[in-house]
Amino acid sequence: MKTLLLGADGQVGLQLRGRLARLGDVVALNRTGCDLAVADDIRRAVAASSPDIIVNAAAYTAVDRAEDEEALALAINGTALTVIGEEARRRNAAVIHYSTDYVFDGSKDAPYAEADPVGPLNAYGRSKLAGEVALREAGCDHLVLRTSWVFSSHGQNFVRTMLRLTVQRDELKIVSDQTGAPTWANDIAAATESLIPQMMEERRVGRFASEILHLSGAGETTWHGFATEIVAEGETLLPERMGRAARLVAIPSSEYPVKARRPLNSRLSNRRIEERYGIRLRPWNEALALCLKEMPPEDLRAAL
Image 1 (cartoon, helix red, strand yellow):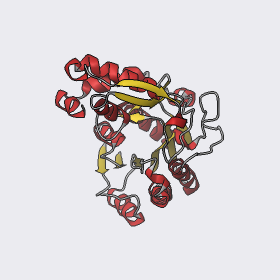
Image 2 (tube, helix red, strand yellow; image 1 turned 60 degrees about the vertical axis):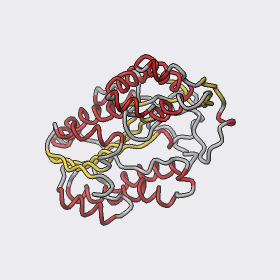
Image 3 (cartoon, helix red, strand yellow; image 1 turned 90 degrees about the vertical axis):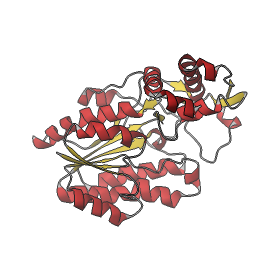
Image 4 (cartoon, one colour; image 1 turned 60 degrees about the horizontal axis):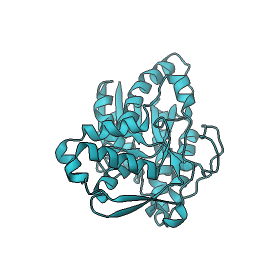
């Protein structure tokens, strides 16, 4: 089996490289190798690799900047999926694509199921929803994996930001009325590795059905709760650096002005993916502890 991995240098993409290689040959491309804003780049990448499956981990993820760059966000997160889907259908290849909790408006009182009505509050969410629709309309075999609050030991994410800021400032104000599940990029990659053989076998025997699945860390917290756990884990690993950690102050979203509105409820129900594929991610706080422990000491110190 040959896999074309797009977005190979991102949080999820970096974790996917080694895991996908265990399943067969992998062509791993970053933005330099395939810019999703350029349709011909996608067509050339697919033609050159002749994949059995395309795993798209590339995305425009700057949520606030997307308010001013919605056309670019839509090109990368939305229009590109039309091209990917059409190229996959033409070659009878499958697609796995990652989406987001931000397709929902956050007004539901319980975790969101896949079939719940969507209603993104911001440009980023609209662009990701457009990608889901584009892939469905392209008519290829595909799975869309919606996830939430992704973190890892590399790249720009909340964990690394908190580790840095908590030793630079005396006080940090953290939103406490948005609820969701932090999800480790490594766990997303592991789930994908488990998912692909099952998906391809279903295709082989004619039982596969394209759908959207939710995939997020078990449990729930707020951004303030997430930050508190990050600081606690950091103090355990590097007490000499974290001894002067900032005081974390819980505030409502209304006191933290940003360009893009965020949903207050980002919780996703993972029941469907567990029932269909037997996949269940570990609790988010366990994943966080493992993520930080796996960071090389020099990288952890650099984050601080």
